[in-house]
Length: 86
Image (tube, rainbow, N blue to C red; front, side, top):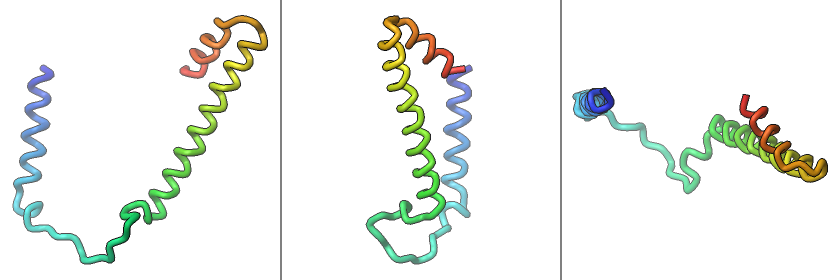
């Protein structure tokens, strides 16, 4: 079943790549910049959101280790991380 799904995916991708509209399409001329797509406001907002979510999750991990050390039980950290995964 996995091979069939992979084959269907490859055939679908090839049908799009080899289609006439895909082969004739050209992008509009634009000014090249060294940042490329990173100049897009939407992408900058998304990267900022990822940064702050990562910061929050990293803080929880560090605080969980400190809490477990403070209470003298290493298993507390495992339970806290398991609860965070729910």
